[in-house]
Amino acid sequence: MLSTLTAIVLTVTATAQTSQPSASSAKVHGPGLYAIFQTNMGTVVCKLYDTMAPQTVENFVGLAEGTKEFIDSKTGQKAKRRYYDGTLFHRVIANFMIQGGDPTATGRGGPGYNIPDEIKASLKFDRPGRLAMANTGQRNTGGSQFFITHGPRSYLDGGYTIFGQVVEGQEVVNGIGRTQTGAQDRPVKDVVLQKVTIERVAE
Image 1 (cartoon, rainbow, N blue to C red):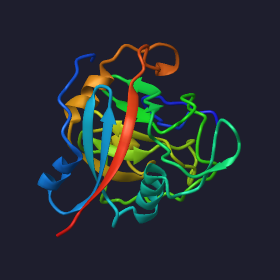
Image 2: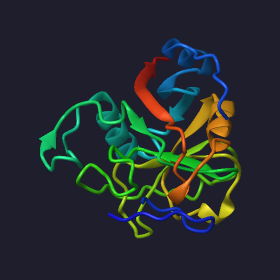
Image 3: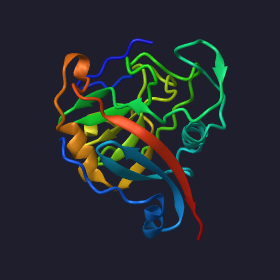
Image 4: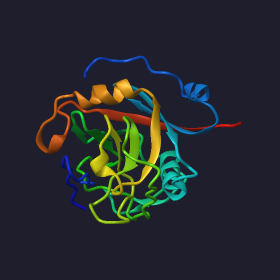
């Protein structure tokens, strides 16, 4: 699945180390479901919108925790393991977004299936740190690839499912955005998503 990403259409296709909060840091942000992205450039905590985008969040959590079956992009075989750990942020555009979730790091990889869009008029790209699903430019073509924005991007409204919000570590997102990139906006030095941890904080 060939992916392209421009300043108008987002599709599937900073070097300083920062302190890394523990997974328990999600608790300070109140009850809810959180994804903790541990990267080689720092940690980002996102609150997941499991009531606004339940199918998207269920899919992301299942892939992250290794409970959801997928087709391995490299082997073509069915697999069930932690999908995101060790993958790269394969596309980075300064002052726009960082994109990950493709085990092949080509922009073409995915889980072997698509999920439906869950686009809500009440959720807009009106602030930094929106966590959203990438797609092919067509409806209902998300799978595993996601992006996190650097700032408001109203032209993305209505085109992509927003399923979370950065609540800690936006400076890490911005730092990744400043990394040097080469062909197809890929970082020259690998930005590794070392681990995604899902934390459930009770009332």
